[in-house]
Length: 143
Image (cartoon, rainbow, N blue to C red; front, side, top):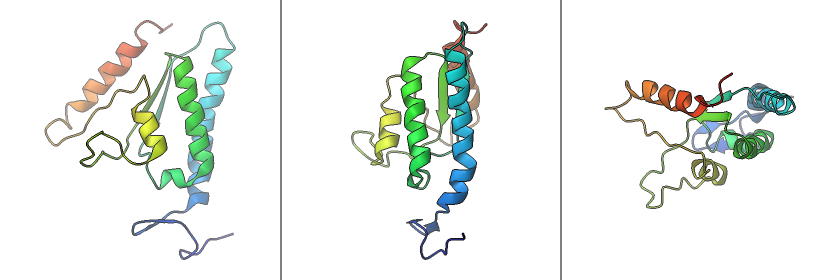
């Protein structure tokens, strides 16, 4: 069933096709969760990195995706072997660094969260800094 732009949710000027997003994003994040569940049942848990480009208002209009993301955050709290590398909206002048999106704020205040701010000055060198951070996180757990 095709949704008309009038009946689809909107964020600003953008129409959100929740069904298409759900069909693409949910299986990806679920496969990470499945691998984590499988590895937690074995004697050696393998490190896992899940990369999500943009977690914001549009993406969280998909309740199934939001639920899977919450499960991933819970899994991260149980394991030092799981990293979520994600882009999120900036706080845009908020005095308390909150973004006003509950799940994004939960992610940013997660005990294992490390925030990298992308600026014009650091955008070229930031990739190497992130790689080093991931390698450092996994330095004691690599097989």
